[in-house]
Image (tube, rainbow, N blue to C red; front, top):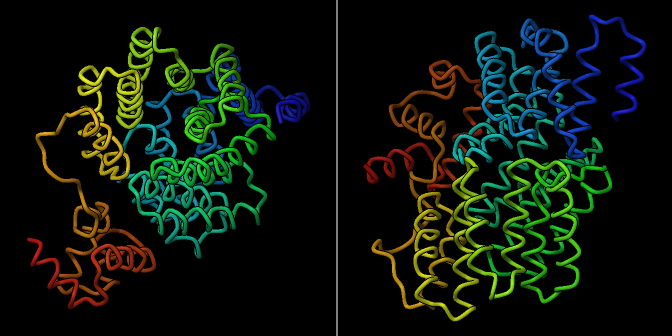
Length: 420
């Protein structure tokens, strides 16, 4: 890909270098050569600033935002994608809307904005019939699969992952398959099924490797794979994958790669080195904007301390992890942290875990739709009020019905009023 981009640039005049430069930057990012990738994206910025987000070639804006996300230039990626989404909504342009909404998925997952990621993913899926972007739909499904996986909804996680894989297979989107396989691996890992987790994570890891993506921050599968392999008793394979993580992080990985490598070192550390390794892992994770990654590192710290028979030391990180998971509604991860905390003789002040099945499980857009439907508005009236298509409203309403356990507008209204 990098070679083709350079060949294209050689055939073009100087004022037409932006697109091949961006494509080369993506290839370099995926292989950990971040400095040169940033140079190329900076050189393309003047052209991108004047590109119409709804006009011909608008896709390059979302593609650039992908590169910025992988480079961990999250503020720049965020600003560029909001520019695209805002312009598409104002113009009522469905095609130019789907791609930036889908591209926000990996960004919002890194920012910890799970509800927003799910809301946008479901909007893209609702627009599937009105857009020919298989990539956008496949990526949106992978994003939804990931959120449902970490929140413990196995049925939905599998459904979205399977749809992502099916769309990806039709369009030969290997990297999207890596995302959906990673989500399924995380689902099994959180549920305590390391053998199944390792199977899916190996597939994701292999997909990325086959495409030449060696930066572990690109699709952050390898640290999860190490954890699954260790839990499955496959230490030799875990150590080989860990060595690849360390090498890639050292050779150009950003904060996500460095945090993953630090967590891997913690998983493999001897008890004698536990304090220093745990401190390094926590310090590195806390540089990330994602509370989930920090909580997972605290969980591993607590698990390692408990297994080293340091139960009193393990209680604080385990309690902190459980509270963080609870706030994110990451139910299986909260249960895992609570089980470890119980084994240490500790407890949380807060009682109980979040159980799905109420209004708290709805995305912001689903709540907006439900409130207007309960007022008695038709789908077309809701669509006009929220600046959505009627098809998208129908999609959000179906999702709300399923989450609330209702099958009609009358039942929805009754449930809505009962829940206050």
